[in-house]
Image (cartoon, rainbow over all chains, first blue to last red; front, side, top):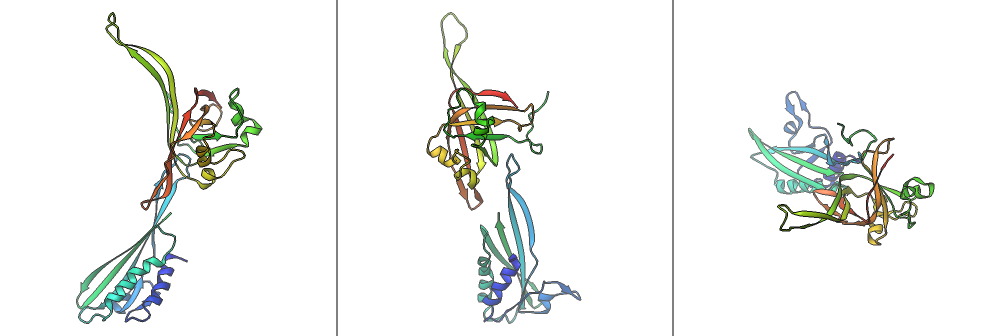
Length: 130
Length: 164
């Protein structure tokens, strides 16, 4: 299962009893408005960004490569009336990184940005695997 | 002049080991070229660094009728140091009668080695001899999550130089 699919599956369960839902759509922009701005209180998970770098170089081309996968998630809420359980939601989203197996590094950072009366949380998942 | 390049496809530095318990002292070539010997040759994969040490010992002294120090040689200390990414098959498994690198080291089994400097095409150079595997210090960490280890061959006697 792809990393994004794993995250979506985990988040669908984890956020089921909260005020935030999960969309399986990509966070594309329609008519100049990002889906997560249009559909507030809905979490969108972006496509995977994948980079492969050399971890160990060897003399016989048995090199060891490291794969880095970065996935962004977006959630917009009303800045004046945030969901009462927003902290729980953020905690669940951050913890969903642990649902991805076979990685030696599973990180998630969150930032937020205000646009007018909207507060957009951006989650950055980062996974490293061999 | 030319270089001993090791970055050409299929022309690698290659370290072969044979620790099958047979005494090849009279003909080390047989450990790597005879049918029986070849069946027990373990090629060490994923070498990262190779250092060949050939250091004659010396004894220096001074005497009153000489303005400079005098020196004579004493027996050499020879060794080959490598670092490698560990491969479970060659580290723990056997190739014929040659046990894996870890077991050979642990059992202090005398090991015949042949180091190809550039590959094994016709005309390529190698050195060979016998010795003991030593210096295993396998390490792993969250930032480098693959086992990597140095290894040293403590050479018992002199190197022999050959051409493929």
